[in-house]
Amino acid sequence: MRKMITASLLTFGTLAFAACGGGAPNPYPAGAQAQFHASCPANDPVCTCEWDQITRTLTYEQYNAAIETFRSEGTMDPHITRAKTHCLEWHPHH
Image 1 (spheres, rainbow, N blue to C red):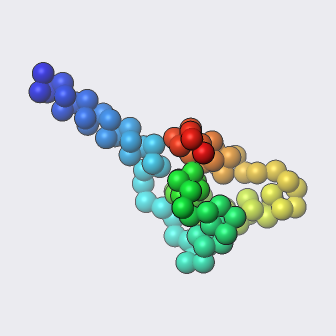
Image 2 (cartoon, rainbow, N blue to C red):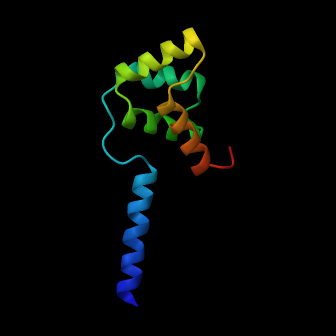
């Protein structure tokens, strides 16, 4: 029984870590996060989660390219869309 509980806790911990994005975030300039949170408040768990997902899946250069594409063409990069969807699923009350 004790082994089953330990295995369950390890599995849950692994899933929780994967849900948060896992791995180290890519380096971004200090002002990038503040700029992101100007339109998506830092006190909103979905926004905090989304920033975490973005920085773990996109380099700063890729993020800038995605933002420029959105501004010029109106289409969002699939990585950013997945980050938003993931965070909305993990924080369903927002």
